[in-house]
Image (cartoon, rainbow over all chains, first blue to last red; front, side, top):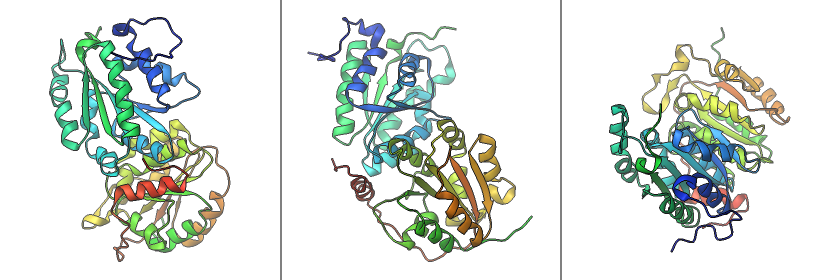
Length: 183
Length: 195
């Protein structure tokens, strides 16, 4: 049974639509007060919630690997950080991931997937297909979610694995869940 | 234009002698050796890899520890790999982050190949264009003495200083290579328990 935010003072959510709000609550409950991102349409709501949160620090990045170093620094300084990116950005991160992997620094990355489901842009396909293998090759643990309820549960336990068990965890948010990009 | 340069270890010693509680992050290679040569302390965080990560690791620490000054000491090659970090840091606008670029205009660790800074790229003007609060190129130890005094003053935003140093490979002074040891020691200094 999922135990999603038993204490959340909100009405029952449709997690297939409102997973960003639920993830935000989950991360806040896990004491995540620091976020870095390269934007992606699938992350829009979560980015907006964090950047509007005066109790959290948000950084917009020029490239995704910056977020890996910033999150490592935040942990060194005593803060829990999350990094948001699209699957295309995972490829930019590989060598920088040696920093949290080798130092065993907690890291949580939420990756919105492209190039794997109903994708119209062929240029998204190579990195989308290589995302999970790339992360695993450098030593990051990969978890995947295909439905909203699954995603919220996975993020909750991934936060425990990252911040309490010194894990480097990427949660891949399936493109099937995100839906087709609208132009 | 002057081509005067200074001894990197003497310059770094001045910065560390006046660090006054600042947390120090070092970029891989010679800057890590320079800082370690002056004394291995709990509040030093040395990078041995992750090229391009020093300034941004410093940003994360600075945001998590707003009451502490963070000083990143790195090389021109390492900072070149983090060119976009100047934009990210400028937008983040930390008031407690100082970046010191030890600029010998070469990739010293890999055979002294010329770097971009020897071919006209000036980090002080790049950082100024990005909106850093204060930036300057410094070519001698008197200038470093003046800088050390300035760094004691509170800042309104991020600062970046380029120290033009002699291109030479000094005897290596190797920090501990155990990455988790350095992490846990640094965090313990700030009062955080290990996992």
